[in-house]
Length: 207
Image (cartoon, rainbow, N blue to C red; front, side, top):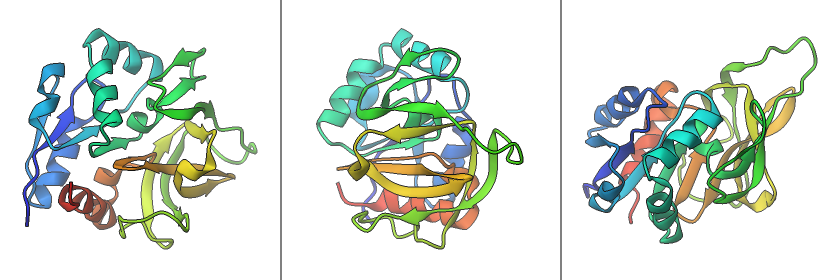
């Protein structure tokens, strides 16, 4: 098994240790780092996140991580975004106002508009549906359940970027895929065996 160097970006907006421990359970070391100049030390990058979009994008800018992240993605190097890490890749979010994101994926981040019987945030286990052209990551089968915690969801402009969908009153995008970029609305590190399998597939996929 080829060992790739995996880095988890620390911008003070996520339970980084739980992501790191999930990789360790699969036998893969993952290092938490925050310095923008260190991206080049890694083969694969994790962009996690829990919390408010506005605070997260402000902290990423404050830490001078925007340019290194965009360069990484332009070079099509492997990146896994998790939850808020998915939303930050989009052009804008309407969480507590309107805020500009990284602009990697065309589209926006919007709040769930649901029937009164459904609570927001959406919290719990939901089944995902796989798009026919979504290749790789067999853990994300049509019968796979992953753990979600979110009040906002992404709405891609280009449907071809949608890799997985789920349903919570309305169908929503559960993951995007473009080249070596994969980003999920769910938390694989909280999704027990199927989530660990997805992280293992990311860690062991060829460069």
